[in-house]
Amino acid sequence: MTFSETGLNKNIQKAITDLGFETPTPIQQESIPYLLENETDLIALAQTGTGKTAAFGLPVLHKIEVERKLPQAIILCPTRELCLQIAKDMESFAKYTKGLKITAVYGGASIMPQIKSLKSGTQIVVGTPGRVIDLINRKSLRLQDIEFVVLDEADEMLNMGFKEDLDTILAETPAEKQTLLFSATMPKEVMRISKNYMHNPKTIEVASRNEGAKNVEHHYYMVNARDRYKALRRICDVNPDIYGIVFCRTRRETAEIADKLMQDGYNADAIHGELSQAQRDHVMGRFRKRKLQILVATDVAARGIDINELTHVINYNLPDDNEVYVHRSGRTGRAGNKGTSIIIAHSREGRKLKSIEKMIKRELTLMKVPNGDEICQIQLMKLIDKVVSTDVNHQIDKYIPSIEEKLAHLDKEELIKHFVSAEFNRFLSFYKNAPDLNVTGSKGNDRNDRGDRKGKRGDRGERTGHAEAGHTRFFINLGREKDMQAHNLIGLINECTRNRNIPVGKIDIMRKFSFFEVPKDFETDILSGMVDSNWNGNRVNVEVSQAPGVKSPRGGGNRGGGGGRSYGGGDRKRSNSGGGGRDRSGGGRSSGGSSSRRESSTSSRRSSGNSSSFKGRFNAAAKRKRRD
Image 1: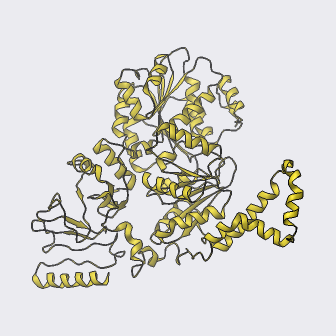
Image 2: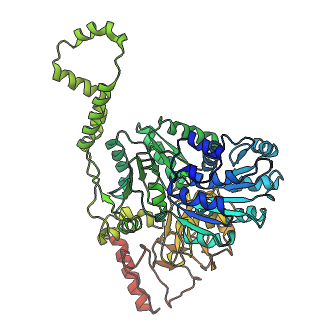
Image 3: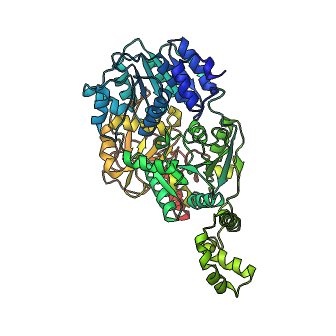
């Protein structure tokens, strides 16, 4: 099938011909003819980079009545970057459709030009939920005549806590409309919520949305957690032509890693939610022009980045949801190019790697972190290639006699050594006697999966009860058993506190409960906002978590009587301390370790409540403390 066979009008076909589009992608082949012929709702699932914007944008443009100068379609998306990208693409598709106007509305920019654009008459609005609601409240945006609603990246909008915003916006639209949901990932909660927004939708799924792109290689490096940044540097150095994105979990980590890379001389910068629109535009402009080789980003900030030439995607942290890994890796290997998706894994992530393999139906290739000699050889050859390919500036011809005179005492070999040393000494010195960063073991190694219980306790810092400096660590009574995942937790925090700007730090999802960290400035927001809240029918209980042996300054948790509740970060390991704490097992449970009984470094037993049992437990705890 070609675009000429899809049934799109001539003006649209002329525009896409100018863009170089000839054959529709699989998602476009499935979606465009269906949407042109039907008015029923649609769920379309496809990998990123497969042309989803054209798949919904072209049929919407075809059906818009240009003579009616009022909003007929609204496209909702999670981020400013994606909003601008969609609007730009839609304008390209509408190049020859006279009288059609598309307006992008998003936060982080002045609202007045957006209001002015809407008042002048626009048929298609592309917006982020927060700014759309603001415009509705100002009576500047009316949705009573909307015929098409597109939810793009609906999963991410829900993860970011936009559920109530979407309800508010959709309540302003007519009951009779066509709702289109396009996404690369479709977690269970999105499927459930889609039932509230859509009526008997048709589902189109191109191949498997969870399979990795065929022209992307999947590599992983196994290192200690503390060596991840060193490994990242070596990966960048061994790939001197790298043009890629490094994905981090939090905004703070994104900024820290980008700062380190820049200080170490790399062409890198960060993009995250705390940047202003002008800052984001500046960074993205430099990245698109390849003045930056490395962009460090969070998943949310990277939405809308549409670049076909990326050579690498590096997972500095693995996402909690495997589908997000597939979404990340799909950003490279586009438009017929080959790409590489890299995971910097540590020793406790063996099972996670196996689950990713199962999802993408491909094997992850274990790579060795290169040593100093390998890196130096590659970088040296890169330098020589650069010298050879450099155009000679003949303005230097007049200086050649003087130069030859100064170099006359050096033979060819000595001249090469001096030249290379002048350019390369700093690099050689850095990697001199560089240690081996590789750790033994691979996917599925039980010893590694348990966090190497007999040693390397320092690597288990991510699960200890100690919050990072300036942060408060919270306990929440929801874990994997209740289908809680990190993105659900972030969405719950955003929704309960009504504040999408809380930078959530480390998250540990356990079997029956979880932990998360936020800056101390937001401690009150969390405690007050999440009181008496519910999630998927489960009552939510949130308390400040205390490290083992640390007395709570509050004199008790929400349910403790005389002392703070202490959590060591483990799944089965939880203790109620203090005179008024409830004892659920007769004598209380004392513990504090890792995410399951098999993974914990010490076993925990329930006591019968008698004094001898208490004494034995006390002595055992003392021995463990001395041993640790």
